[in-house]
Image (tube, rainbow, N blue to C red; front, side):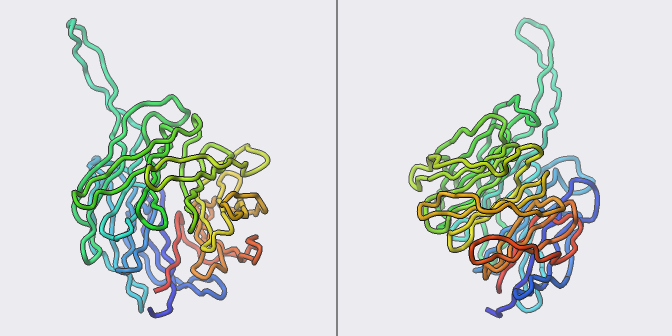
Length: 377
């Protein structure tokens, strides 16, 4: 390892503006970020994942197709990170067979990638001829689900090997059908969970590495119209934490690594007043002592202490103006970084020994910042 640290910022916006992936040199003493380069300005980088074994950054392009195309599916991209300069070089781009891929995660072996696709909410009207000779219409929505891709030896993305499709409609406000918004694996990379904010469910999976197949396990129904969004795992306990895009609660749930079943340990309010609350991202500290959740709408960061069983208790609500969309804890645990999409900045917060946050100012200005990761190479 070189000992250098680089920050990768994915920028996101559905509007046709300059977006892409930005790379910065990261100063662990101050959390300040020095711009190196920007890549692929048409890419709406919904989320990122870094594989330290190969030095490869994976990014989803949350789109329907290439600019100028009509549909066809979104994309996942693999970039090699130069450990000396921080420059990125594109290994390859792989189309996934559904639109708006929103999250990417590698398994413990590094040989398989899972991509969740939440798709749009638009429908196509089709003519239907009924058995009695009458004519009516039917609405057909895009497929939503999870995609399994092979990862090649050099870290490039290989072929699509399997998909797990989800069907069904809902009358939940703002949703019409399945809407898989995230996929994450446990610390060992053996079991995976996906949040479906359309049907208000969390699904669990394993990967059949011999056949290249997604193995569905359990399905957990969450509260109606809460829109499950993201998760974070405790580093040593079989506990995951989950937030909901339209709910003021954060959940702590025990998971069974064999069956994939979830059991609710507790649910806690994020804020005392739920008006305008729209949780986005969440992270657990490497030592498993603290949980952080970003809340858009009201621009807050909520801090929880975790006890020896992984049960949270709220200890702080910190201001984070500018629409916190994605958060990250620096490798040495000294700073939390927030990608503030509305303010187009990365904001730094110093983490005290008791887990609480102190605003350390803007680390960098990045138009439409959506997610950030800091990696020591």
